[in-house]
Length: 379
Image 1 (spheres, rainbow, N blue to C red):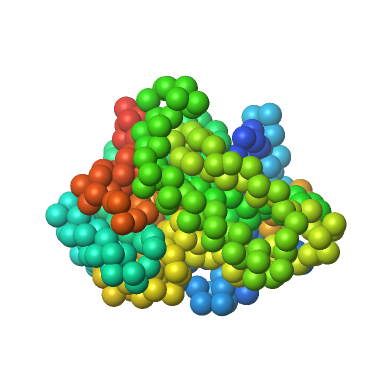
Image 2 (cartoon, rainbow, N blue to C red):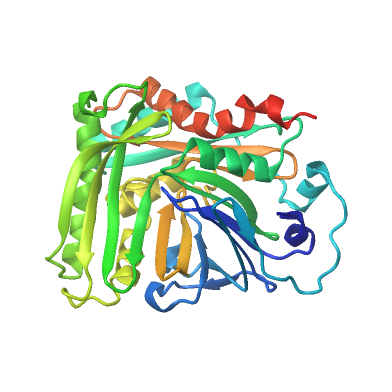
């Protein structure tokens, strides 16, 4: 495979692997990615990408699967390519010249982040909101021998239950990640699925049944579950199945997760995916509760543009299914280096120092893949 073919020719391209799958998909379009308000059930084959701030979802990018390759059982099935400009022999250092420059932002120190968490707790104590999700960004330099394909392969190996992806949208952004959180999934025309995922602690090999959760983490997850149920109520959907909360493992972290399913045909909700996407994003798992007050606080105090971090992204009508995920555990590839992103849910019981530690744990997912295998990348 050679991603540089599309990057150097200024065409959008996306690489992904669904959770618990061995198949890798790779698409490209020969026209720029276009902005749409998603209609999930009637979209063509392709890939949706949305930023965190996306009023009415009108700023959602769509990459059509004009060219679609699949890797099954270790073998790529590659369609023919049109006669584009030839790809020049290049190293990653040359390739990254096609990426955006790093943003000029004030990155949080530990003291800054803990102070911001403290402000969030005070706002919650005043009754302005019940939960708030505060995030931060962290810059890193590329290690020697960094290669996109190798890092993506490592993500797939280390995080088999995550949605692993890489995308490059010319002049818009280049991102890679391994996210554990489904936003919505449509399985054929019949089944709708979403999850409530919240609460975080380190996984150290212990039995899942022995995981202990604090009152803060249990309440944080319950708020996300109630948010989903309230969205169902807004559209008068009463028939759904709920399972959880239960402890799930995502790499070296554990979370609390509740699963929700809906039979769209039995409930006569053929456009449920589109309706729920509009209601859910941004969820209380990445923004807060209530949504409007949380967004106002973050806009005033967080201090940077999240861009595609905590937005959503995923597949449209690929092999008959659509899967959209919240963009967590991710990094942005820029001309000068990498930017990592992570956040944590704040409640009245939060402790600022522990919230900093949680963001460090989450960022380690990307850092370990980038640097733990540094020797493999070096010539």
